[in-house]
Length: 255
Image: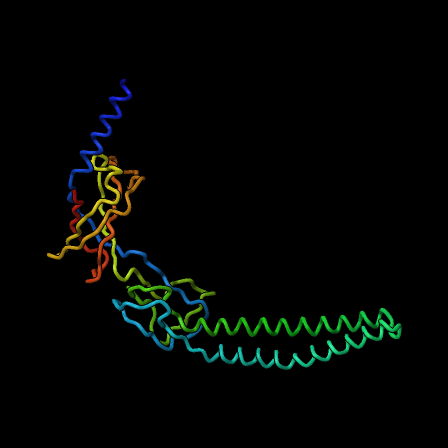
């Protein structure tokens, strides 16, 4: 009976919290941030976008000077082309050696040597082909493209800047969701309730209001060293009118 009463009390508390509107103060953050890095080295030749711009998936963001990549690719293709006749010749020689061996006109040693020459020619050609594929890939990476529909948040490079991912992994651009943003606030232990998750909300800034929904609710204290427990609450809201990150906003969790 006591446990049944406890369940009733807890259920009543959850219902009262779910019916209670909360007014909070928070700050804006970018939703779905993406840091874009260069995949190959090169000098920036063209920056095709600006902060605040919405880009489509596959749209050009930054273009690197592809001259050295083109040169390496041409050289690799030349080597591949020069090795192709050797493979053809080795194949013909091996076929002839196999035929003679089957007629008992060629020794096992000579057949093995013909087979080895064919394997060597094929291996060198395959290695050259791999180099062609490698340099073709690196050439394609001189055009840095948007991985998805997004808004350009920041560009951390300039024209003429040399990028080398082998030396530094610093991002060159930052993208974020094109249509949504996040507002984050802290709630105390008395305000925390699982019933808050998926509740409709309204985010307000400078006389503007944006509809949203509570999409994340912290399960760990935001600052364990603080004597008063506090948990993060995140509201995902419409941002087609474009707000900056770090703005102070009012958050109202609706009934």
